[in-house]
Every structure is written in C-alpha cells, then in structure tokens.
Image 1: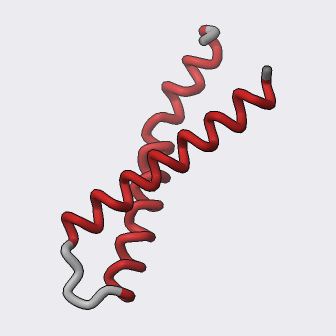
Image 2 (image 1 turned 45 degrees about the vertical axis):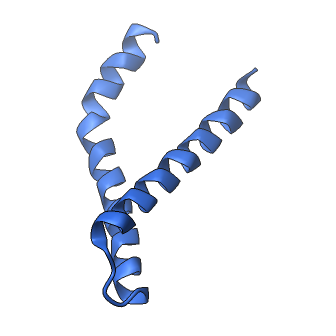
Length: 67
C-alpha cells in the first residue's frame, strides 16, 4: 500500500472499528428481538462469521473491478 493511503488508514482505523462494532450491535439487537432466549455467544459467532463472508464478497468484487 502506498504511504499516503496508509497514513489515511491510520487516521481512520478507530472510526472503521467503531462502524464495524455498530454493525455487529445492530444484528445482535435483531437476534434479541427475533429469538427468544437467544444464546448470545452462538449468535455472536454466527454474526461475525457472516460479516467475514460479506467482507470476502466485497473484497472479491472490488478486486475484480480493479483488475
């Protein structure tokens, strides 16, 4: 990665982490509403796994467009 892009990412890292955490919390709330007596640990693992899959898909799409 070029140096200027790394500097910008360094500035935005905390914001990006906060955005991801907010996304996780959004889906935790949905599970809480929709699933009585939800196993929060299991729900968290499922949510995080799906976010990782979604990121993989976004990455694949972006790399295909930039190739």
